[in-house]
Image (cartoon, rainbow, N blue to C red; front, side, top):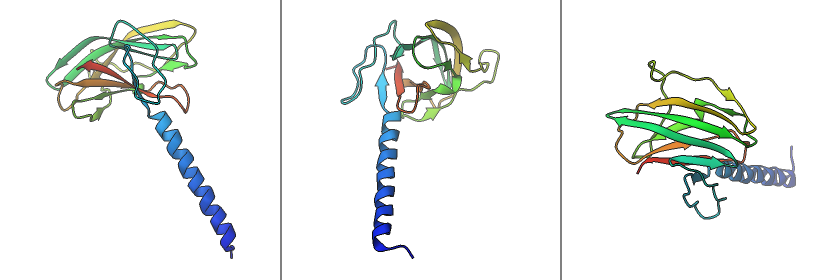
Length: 164
């Protein structure tokens, strides 16, 4: 049977792991805004980009264009330039947040909304425009596009304001 001291060490170790997991989760889900927006306190400033709406994370840029928001349908296109450590673009990196902050994943239900595959690129290469379509509960403003580029464990979730 384990001693009181060894149980205490086990509890301390598990508490340390829980704190580490929390810190990693907070870092991975930190929100920044592109298009020259000011970051929240304690966060790294996003790099500048234009024309808005756009985001620039460590040299990985995305631009949003062709926004059409009608009824429960939102369609837009994204274009990328990658000069970062990231290696790909993927439609699953995007989520639309409606006015209530409810997330909606992309849909692929027509020729106007085809699924595009994960695209490998780097060294300043460009890709796009590539379509993204969503069916939120409402297309009423504010609408935000959450971009979660795959840039390692300690990166980010970027909020791009589409309709303020």
